[in-house]
Length: 76
Image (cartoon, rainbow, N blue to C red; front, top):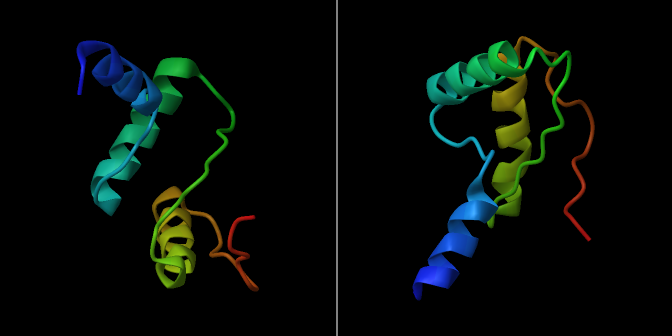
């Protein structure tokens, strides 16, 4: 990558949280403490569309929320 391309790539990752359940929980907690936000907007993505519902369930578990109920629709 050129320096410019690398900069654009890294800027695109700003604000992204990824990792184990423990890492994500810690990062979310730090984000909420730092910003004082009452809520956050979360999107998740995976190339493995069958794994996507599990990703949502795991996120719900680390946030103490109810798991996703019903079908999760693959993106447009």
